[in-house]
Image 1: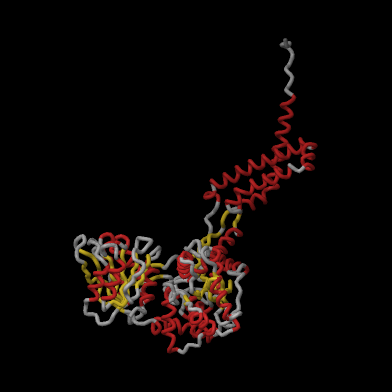
Image 2: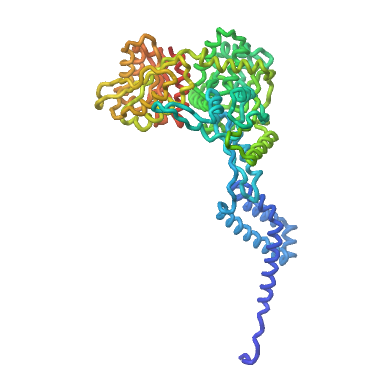
Length: 621
């Protein structure tokens, strides 16, 4: 029994624990200070790397501790190592808490980054976006983003000059009143495909306060003929090195000896295609009288693509179908060289999985033009900011040091001089004035109740957006197709009489005001009624529908019935169907008619679908 007057002795373990805790805290603080720069670097890493890096370090440490020599040291200095590990663990816990707190309070802690907007051609979006992400990572301040760069698709060449000269506004008529809307957010900088674009951009009188600022070269490329490896090997049997032959000989070998076609997008909507068209005309040594026929062949073989990316997507779908049939596409694509790498790597914007069915190779030729990407600074009137302009200049200088497509080869012998620029400018003007045949387009709109929501507003907006795709001598008529009762007789009613492009705004309003409250009617009956009219000249028909009218052709033989009606309609030269609201066409092919037929889905852009329709049907006369 203890003496009550005797004082209790303090626990010797308590003092030791307190001492170890103080030393551990001090060690944690020291380790934490040492790790600060590494922690900042860690925070700039992508999230997936932040998650895997600690686990990887743990695995490496565990592996090292299994080495006998290191294990012996650990046992000899067990207390010292334990103290170090306690300090490291304390610093780790503090770091995790700090990072978690920073993530939860990031919005309050980080100031809003500066916003800059860039535009470029569709085929350059992926690469330019990659560069902007790298730039944003490198320019974080205290772990916070200091700048946010967004990349958007620039308007096509047919719109670009108007966009810049009208302060990025799309101007049109709505209900006989002027109406303006932005193409998209006004860009702070534009990455052009060639100096030819910039030349026209300057000559057009860009409404920018520093529109005369010099552009910066931020990348280079070259147009190529892209084809499958099998077709490339076949070409090699005819000529070991195509670049040693004239471009005309290469073209004739591909098209005549190998039976291939050459596809490129529409030059109205793709600057790369416009440059490629110039190369085709001059490389084949075609006289001006043959330009119209050559251009019509390029349109017919172009897979209905309006951009390089859509051409690659269409080719990929064709390659998938060819693989199922154990064949190989006999098509060469006239595209920028970097697009071949994008296709093979599955990096085509909006078209995942390219390159899985087949790989492309690039056939280069000295007569195909180089592409020199130019960084053009844009400052809109009333929006000047010294700080913003400094950021725009800084990114331009950075992009010059980190250029687009650094691994793409260039073998072109063409020099971009005044003669080349004049040829390109002349060709652009000739497209709608001379190379595109006059178009008398008949547009049939499915005015059934089921088509109201997917068709009416999209069709009207798409038609407005395509006014510049029509030449002054083109004419458009619009009809409605429906039945008054279920399975009743088809009726074709006039919505808009023959109108010129300047009146398309009014035509769109009439479509918007048309009642969509009737029943579906068969397309074949609509074609029969158009064919029975008093029109003297056959013209193509574009049908806009939700696709349900195909169900009314009877007996599951829609393709046969429509083919017969198309063949019998004397004033219809071809039928082009655009299906809204569905991802497939019920009738993809017709047999029993010599007239052209095509069915596509509107997809995510009704405007692009109508653009493709307009250019494709010009030759259906």
